[in-house]
Length: 227
Image (cartoon, rainbow, N blue to C red; front, side, top):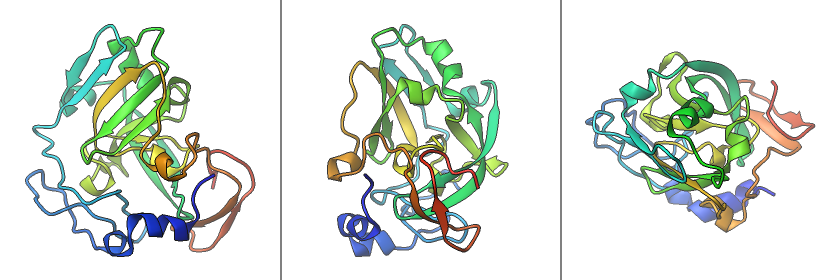
């Protein structure tokens, strides 16, 4: 089960958790990305770090696949584009909705060709965050690799140049600022799961405070939030 809000705050530490984050849209920006309760969509990282230089950024895809490759963002933007409006739910009991655009994992998989032993994708972030995502979750019709948010390039504070969106799962599975995708045969313990978060991370019935609605909503069934 996900941690309660007060337990989460104890883990990340009050001072680091509440520090303000500047707006970072320039690839040469050197200010740290930090947590901030921005209106409409809160910003969350597990630790402060510098934005990546999108011009130099590369996505390495390797592990148990027949055609490992390295991509820059311009190549990824040439993949068949997909978009959706979906809500991301945080274990802190808030959620936020946005229009996301990018490509489905299957589009990438058709190029790099994961082999039959590949059961999980071990995803590495620029800030050393990491997660293990099962292949069936990645192939879900609502899972999306994202490079645009609300019809604009994905901002650094929300994971530029590339992040994952998995609407039926809590936000800690929607890893941001991805730099490497590694196909592996066995899953492992993701960063927050070592502190008690559910490895499965499916959103559970309970309370939610949608930032765009402004009042509490009861979650009545597991999975993606439909409001």
